[in-house]
Amino acid sequence: MTVVDDQTAPPPAGSPPRLLDLGVRVAGAIIVVVAGVLTGVLELLLATVRVGGYLIGVSALIAVGANIALSWFAYEAVGRRWAVALPAVPWFALMAVAAVRTSEGDLLLAGDNWVGLALIVAGAMTFAVMGFRQILAPAQTLGR
View (cartoon, one colour):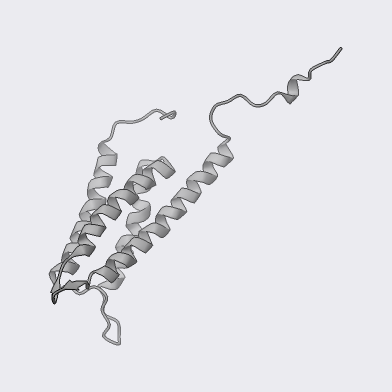
């Protein structure tokens, strides 16, 4: 005759342990911040792309697409409405630093061409709209 110990039963299926959930959310937040910096650098590098001698503004289009994706992923990874700020803050900081002339005269993002202005406006408006959508979104239950 065998006696089964009730304490060796596996935990019930359901939500993951709190520590694991917290770890995944923190990892997602770190990934989003790094991605915000990387997309900002990519957009700055593409701000000078020319075809036939004319600026084409591909960086502004990439800014809109990347910022939408980053905002969505930030909310999904962290699970909080304020998470849209995680990629936005380093992106804004990078754009501010890129728009200031160094003591040697170097300038990454010039304000005297349409691409630099379009990049800043399009990226900032995208983050603003995505943040506003999060504010207006109806509250979701914890189970999603």
